[in-house]
Length: 185
Image 1 (tube, rainbow, N blue to C red):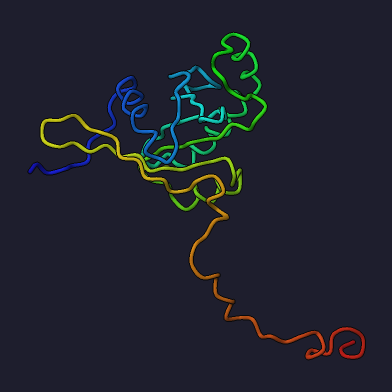
Image 2 (tube, helix red, strand yellow; image 1 turned 120 degrees about the horizontal axis):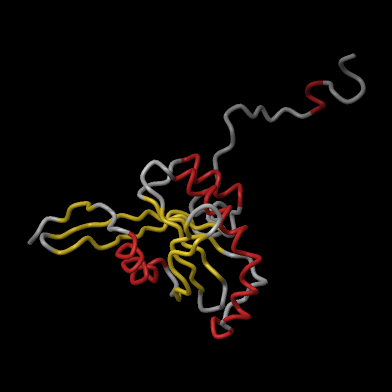
C-alpha cells in the first residue's frame, strides 16, 4: 500500500478540471457554466449552478490568503451579479436564476478564525468555506480532497448544548441594586 502525501495544487487548467469532478462531494451537484472568467481585477475560477438554478461562484485561494479570499469573493460576486441577466440572454440554455443571490464557495488549504468570522459577518447565508488539499499516492497525480468548514447559514446552525452562561452573571436585578427610583442618587 502506498503512502498518501500532501501534494501542491496543480496548475490552472488541471486544478479546475480536478475541481469540476470533486465539487459534488460537498453535498450537492454543481454544473459548471464557465471557467477562468475574467472578473473584477482578477479571475473567477469557476461559475457553476446548483440543480435549482442558483449561481455558485467558486474561488480557490492559497495558503495564508484566506482573509483576502473572502474579500476577493465578495468583490467578484458584486461584479458578476449584474452580468448574469446578459449571460442568460446570450445563452438561455444555462437555466439559471439571475434574480437570486449568488452563493460563494471559497476553497483554500485552511481558513483562520478571522476569515471565518469575516465570512459569517459578511453573509452567513451565502458563503461556504471548504478546505481544499491535494493528496498524491505513489506515482498517481494529486487528487483533490474537499472538507466543508462552513455552509451557508453555518454561523447559525450549531449542534450540541447551548453555550454556557457567563460566570460573570450575578443574577442581581435592578431592585437588588436599588436602581430605578428609590436608591442611588
